[in-house]
Figure (spheres, rainbow, N blue to C red):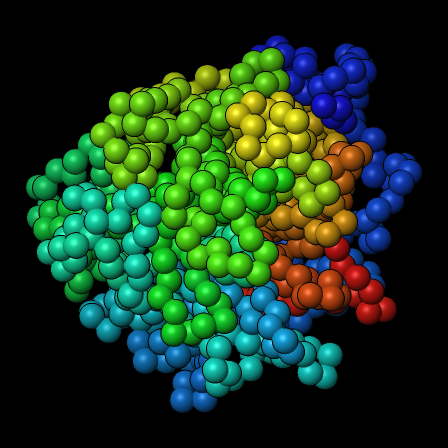
Length: 607
Ligand code: FEO
Ligand code: CA
Ligand code: CA
Ligand code: CA
């Protein structure tokens, strides 16, 4: 596979890793600065790059504009109340309002209606409970307020007077929270490990939380991915030792200050050890039916799901690519048994299939290793779908530098995954005692900048178990470093960034890259400014910065209007960790996670 790489990573990486095929390698290319963006020829980008900055606003290229569509705490119904900057909302107001920390999202179009489904990943305690001296929930109502601020917000939006805004009281508006009833489907349904006192059948679960990236199906359902679910469980008996199985998922005494177990016993694993087995899944939601019961699709495995990228194969099977975002966990794919039928009943396609974990090999080749009772020695597919990490450890999958979003090229069989960073690479094994060797798609020790790996399935067939891979980019800082930490050749002083996270392709085959990294603008990160969004050209390797977010934010989540004339982008947790933002309301306002719409001033297409 041809790549644009000419730079080699110290001596640890085989030249072929970064060169691919026959691209010319030279020591000169390694030593010299990357070619400035302006000297490149073919320009598919349609915008001039934005400079890095540390401003408390959204910066977009000349000729583009942005406006806020929805913010944490905006009411979805007229029986809600506008956000109160003093109290930062109450349990009652939050139950009727957009959740906090918006992450992945998808816009669905139904006739004349536009319905936005957006994940609410977690709450920022210092901001969410900034009205409390402790910056923590103080009492049952506060806990319920935070349980109402996570999950998924689904609401209709309308375009009026040149701006998008929430359609209050739309019949399609819905809040899904940590208490919404859902169904367990697939192999783990009814298994001993998911049965609890409250649900002795092991079929119905309360709520979803830690909702990170997303997926959408060709049958127009929304997939919300449960990621850092462990940070909500604890044991009120401080001497209680979690099982090794729970420890593999980082479930322990630390609940990250959420305090849910103080008022809701199901988050106390000493009393309900199977509760953590009922989260960590991909959940399928029908965004057009507010009365529908969300379905946890256990066939797609249980881990810290980042997103779920779907592809329909030539034979109609559904392949779902998924990352497990924890240091040195794995990359997965699911291949459905059933086949997609356009306009048919595809309701159970994600209930049955085969799970695979990726093994990357040194010769730029890789294999998908099936996770079955035969390959893992586990007793059943149900157990594999609950203890998926353990299954992937047994077969020898490759420990990765924190797989975040996966994105499939719309025009060819090529898949990309953002590997955000990994301070443990080469230093520490993962929680399953798997080694973390430096090399392959994880070429840098204590990786602080991240990279994007891509692969092509053999024969262009997503059902193939073999693939060829290369690195699309290694992020880095060429002003501070001259070794591998300078980044790959397509990184320069005008486009440098760290910690790629959200990625998605537009219809033109350009890759949009969002960052969740260090925004100190100092030391290793000097010159990078706030978190940002860039656009990459898979063919040339060129990467150009499109947007800079406000202070302290992560830029995460993107979706397009059906006419491709609006791009919706998520600004998550501006002002976190004392970064002093008042985005987007300004003045002395409480910073609020927001969804912004970006349009082109001439009304043209964006992506
Ligand atoms: Fe929620 Fe891995 O990001
Ligand atoms: Ca993410
Ligand atoms: Ca991240
Ligand atoms: Ca985040």
